[in-house]
Image 1: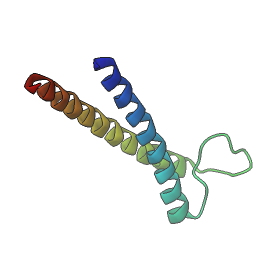
Image 2 (image 1 turned 45 degrees about the vertical axis):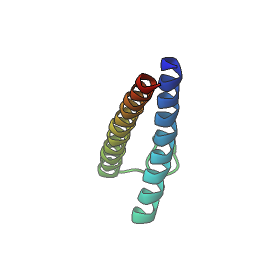
Image 3 (image 1 turned 60 degrees about the horizontal axis):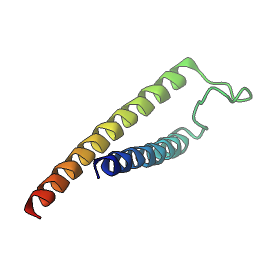
Length: 87
């Protein structure tokens, strides 16, 4: 069952990362009126300032998601261990 919890935690982390990326992209597009700088769009000129700002925001959101996913997984493992002790 421990492997199941780890896989579930990984799946939740990946899903949260995907949702976080979409959220940051949407907020960036709504606030600046431009598509987020991803590095693969050669037709859209990107300033260094906007690229660095986007990288900072993306990294911050990613770090927060990672911490929250890890804490949630640890809480689930603890809750599962307590419920096994009762049974």
